[in-house]
Length: 92
Image (cartoon, rainbow, N blue to C red; front, side, top):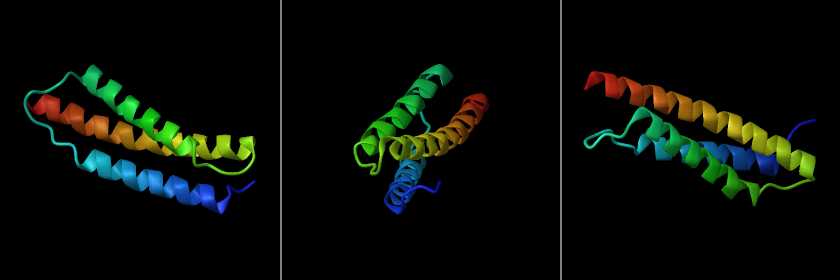
């Protein structure tokens, strides 16, 4: 079953906004630990999920599927961001 167009649009908007957030991050002193940055990235993902949860439409199953897709996309983006942060830490 395909996602409702409104939910697809919300997922796209969430991904775009999350990418913008990640691209705005500047790695500089003072640095935080890798574990702390993982916590920050996970908190960002959860913040976005909670924000978009309120906007999803359709029956509960549809909303759950849309949120699951959004979480998967944001988690993938966060993992890539964390890889960049790890490389930054190694370069110090």
